[in-house]
Image (cartoon, rainbow, N blue to C red):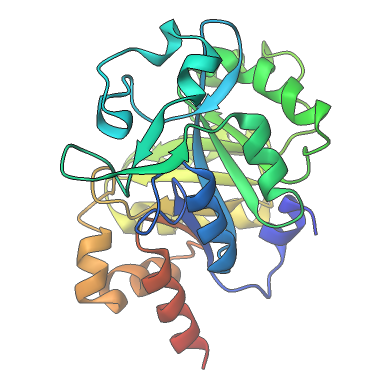
Length: 276
């Protein structure tokens, strides 16, 4: 099934996005973490993309390699051979985590690993790479399995998108911040971008819920993050582990049908229990 068709399916349960892979038993953003997400039966895996000094695309979140690989260097100033030779620390890294046999993967390795197995959210750490990433995705025949994303909530954001060559044919997810007093204008801008999904932030959950029907009628599903560092209104993974009904359940009731989490196993268990 194509990514767009899966997200548009009205019969599916809430989709689970494994943030940087299922990384509790493997280094984040590693091939092992991606394999764990596939084995876990999650819908989507999110990975972070950067570009090496010699023009190759690789997977890493931070601006330096210190947390995950133990060296304080800027990866964009290194060659792909130098980068992919580095071993990754377990889980979310840091000096207390041991090194593993996993190394920094390239985008090509990730796309081959996920082919026909799981959908992929491509988080570009520099949006100016969008056309380069799109070209690689198309070259590998993976356009139906990934998304590209960027802001789509202002006229300026829409104008920037219109200037990006070669991104047509790849599912696009708009990013937007819904605020009281301007939520309708935000929804209008998002709809104009024609994404299949919207990664939404909000000042109140009710603000976003008020635009759900309008967006749904335009064929746009809502994605929200419950990641502790970037969640909205205290709707965090940590809180969800204590009271999933108050966090994940409340979000689903508001029309959110895609949740990105660092606790994919707990979210899956909760969704399955609700459907039992």
